[in-house]
Every structure is written in structure tokens, then in C-alpha cells.
Length: 300
Image 1 (spheres, rainbow, N blue to C red):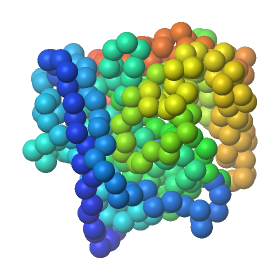
Image 2 (image 1 turned 45 degrees about the vertical axis):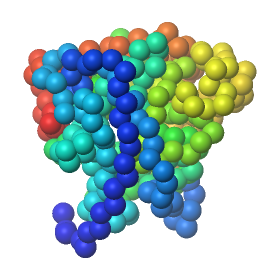
Image 3 (image 1 turned 180 degrees about the vertical axis):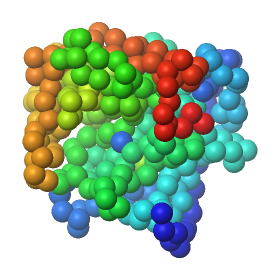
């Protein structure tokens, strides 16, 4: 990859912990609407209360987590790294805990709502920074804005060797599980939000199973009103259909076929979403214990 002139900017976020931990390691419209992702602002609180079962205690414990961008947005060299309080790089995929307790999970924002740059965790690079996806050496953009905050659940993995009998026998896509967050606030790249899952969509992308967990940030004004898929339909009418249709159709402008969906082409309820999270967290644990082949994935 060519080296470009690099500038760095760092945003600080406080990591709060209310309990002793045993370890924390346990992815629009036209170009003129592309956003500048790192906006100046006040420090944002990030809770990292959980544990990692299989690796020694992480340096994230009782420290500050910083999110630092290297390079210029919309360049091949652009990366968003996560640093602990000592300045050491950590992985947003492996080092940020999944569970916060009481049905609350950490969600890492890769793509802020109403933007089109296709940002994603670089699963094959050390410390898995967030970067812009590429195809044939060119940066990728969605053909239109995504209408929700989009990103990943840490400490999850869709195992490409596992054929899901409930979803047409499709194999996992070798990535963390995706979250579509439906709250009203536009987040920033690298934000870690507390969310509660509400529903699950079983997208099948070129034969691979690519789960979309629909969730809402706890700081959203309507968060207390929605606790399951039926509540989403009541308080965010049409949203589940809109999410399905967006992900079904976004490749069509590039001449590709529409994506398919399993589970009757409908959103499954919260219990099913939690089942998906639990199973993919177990798959990630096997990956980290080297019980599953990592291939080109970085486990650092």
C-alpha cells in the first residue's frame, strides 16, 4: 500500500469500571455527501465492564481508552486505532468486551448513519483497526447513505466452517457480527455504544451468512419503549423492512444481484438475536483458543 502524508488526531474517551474484571480480551448518496467522520467534541464515556475468559487480563482494565486516527480519511492509508491508557494499541474486535450485563452489549461504530464510506474493522491486520474497505485497489463507497449507525459486536465471529441448518445451510462470512443501531443520534467512527439487541435479520450475501442484529443505543430517548421486534414495529414503524430492503438492494447499482434473507425473509425476535450473539461469541472463543483455524485473521 502506498504511503501518504499522515496526520493524526486523537479523541479521548473515559473507560469506566464498576466491578473487578478478570480480563477484557475475551463494518448514500453521491460523493458530495460523504462526511468528515472525526468531529471535534467533548470526551465520550465508554463502559467496558465485562471479562475475557481465555486470555490474561488486558491493559484496558481501569484505564483510558483512546481512539486515534492515522492518515487522512478517504485514503488507502487511513486507519482508526484503539489505544489503552499507556498508549498501547488494542483490538476493538478482541479487546473490547461483548457483555455489559442486564442484556446490554458493547457496539463499535464503523459507519456513522447518513454516510457512505464503507468502513470496517481490518480483521487481517494487527490490532484490527478500522479502515475503508477496498476493491481492486480502490476505496469502496455505498451507492447511497446508510440510514443507521452500523458496526460490529466485539468478541463475536461468524465461523466460515459452520453451516447453519436454520438458514439454508449457509456458512458464516468470517467476520464479527454486524449491528444496525436505529437510534436518532449520529455516532462517530470508533464510538462504543451501549446497546440492547431487538431483532435479527439473516442476510445471505453471495452464499455466506451475514447476520444483521438490530439494536438501539441506551441513550436514545425511545430506548425504554423498545425491547423486542414487535416494539420496533410499533415505535419505529417500517424500520425493520427498511433495513432488510437496504441491505437486500445496495449492491444492485453495481450490477450485482440482490442479497437474500433466510428465516422466511423476516426479522427474528430478540430471543433469536440473543441466540445468534451467544453462538457467535462461542465461535469467537474457539477462535481465540486456536480451537478453530484462524487463516489470515489477526488474533492480536
